[in-house]
Structures are given as structure tokens and as C-alpha cells.
Image (cartoon, rainbow, N blue to C red; front, side, top):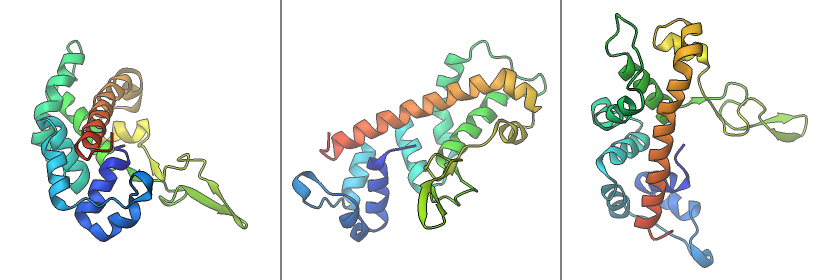
Length: 186
């Protein structure tokens, strides 16, 4: 998941007053990013990461913009992957699933997205989501989403799916570094 830097940009773009309370700069001074700062930071990203960051911020996924850059990288690592015979666009479906899972994760049902649960009088970190408040899809849910048998997903496509997620993780790390540089927080 994109770190605090992009969260700061999202808060700043949506409500600058919340930003004052959210982000403290060096020596405790308040840092406020206006819309121009946010737009400037995003404009410095390369097109693939910019499309991904925009989708993350708005929660509106433009499949074509992201897939234009993601699919060549996926095809590079998956040159020898064999798609199901009747599904020539299966790799794109798998990549779509990865993007949707990264950008719009499921809230944990155990803690209802809070990250902690209350036992008697104290709060404890949720054991299901490890305190994140988010829960990834299970292998069975992923297999159902792309309409293949769960065992096929488990033994053939799960590792490949995680390779696609690793590409998106790298994009997120690159985005965080670029945003820190753009906002002078590196």
C-alpha cells in the first residue's frame, strides 16, 4: 500500500485543513500542501506510476491507462506463461485483479476495518489483519474472480499473481520516493 506520503497528498487535495493536523514537518512546524503541490508531485512521476497514483487517490481505476504500462512488464516476466486455451486475455484479467486488489482493498470483517478489537476494557491488534484494517482476498476468492478452479489458481497462477503484485509494489516504492523528493521531504 502506498505510504503516508500519498495519503498526505490525498488529504491535502481533499481538505487542506485536515492536512494541517495530519502532517508535521521538521522541528514540529506544520506542513501544508496545496492543490498545486499535489499536482506538481504527481506530474513529476512517469506515466505508468502517474496513472497508478491517480487511480489510488481517486479510487477510480482507468484500466487502459494502467494496463498500457503494466501489461508489457507482466509479459516480460511471464513470457512462458500459458493461458487457458479459451481465454487469450487471461493475463490481463489476472493483472486487473491485482490492480483492483491493491487500489481498493477489502476491509477486515473481524475488526470492521479499524485494525484493533476490544476485549473487555482494552484494545488489541486484530489477529486477522495484523492491525492494518485491511484483508487481502483469499486464493479461493481470487480464483472465483477470474473464473478458474481454486486448485489451478493455487498450483499454477498464485505465484504468478504475486509476481504481478511485486511489480505494483515496486511502482509504489518508486512513487513514494518521487513524492518525497518533489515535496522536499527526502
